[in-house]
Every structure is written in C-alpha cells, then in structure tokens.
Length: 150
Image (tube, rainbow, N blue to C red):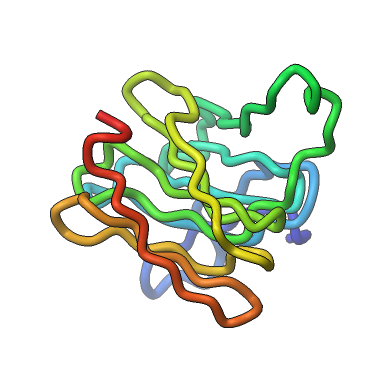
C-alpha cells in the first residue's frame, strides 16, 4: 500500500477488507463521521475526499480561491475534523488557513486566518460554536464560527 492508499481492516483479520486510493499524493489525515458512514481523507494533493466504508468515493472538496488566485497550487491538507453533527468539516492546510466546508451545500463556507505557519490540528467544540486550531509554530487559535457558517 502506497502513501496515497487507504486500507481498512476488520478486527482480528490479517489482511485489509477494503483498499482504495482516493488521492494522487500522500494521505495526511483521516476522520470518520460520528455515525461511521463517511470517511474524510486529506492529502498533499490539496483535496479532501469523502468516501464510504466500502471505499466508494462520493465527493471531493476543493478550496476556493479568488479569480486573481485561480491558478494557485492547492495547499497540502494536513488535518481534517467533522463538526459534532457532521454538517461541517474543518480542514487545516499548509498555507496557514483553516477552511470550513458546509457538507449540505458541498461548498467552502468560511476561511479562518491568523496562523503564521501550517495548520496541523483542528477541533470543534461540542456545540459547534468554536473551532480551535494549532500551527506548526505552536500557535493555538480559537475562532468563533457560530452565525458565520449557518
């Protein structure tokens, strides 16, 4: 299995039950929804792929850029996390930005700025009011997102 592949095992089994390659470059992060129905994977290719447990791909999320930056290379995705109700996905990237995707609309809903280095961890609070993020330079930021993404 290469760095761009994902393998899923059942407990006690010697070989993977499912193997798939949703990305063109190394996978950097994985996160299941709370109900285990969808797996979000981030990669150095700058994409977030949403897959079922079977490995079936059902959507790809891409960051949005202004017209002036439309040809810009996609920043590597370093971390992903679902909101507690699985409506939103917070994505931390190498360009020091946290992007919030609205999964019902399948669009990037918000950009959270303020870091000075790549974002390596993101976390929602249980009420989906705040997103905390940390960067490779040690910064920890807490962003209020309630009312900004609804």
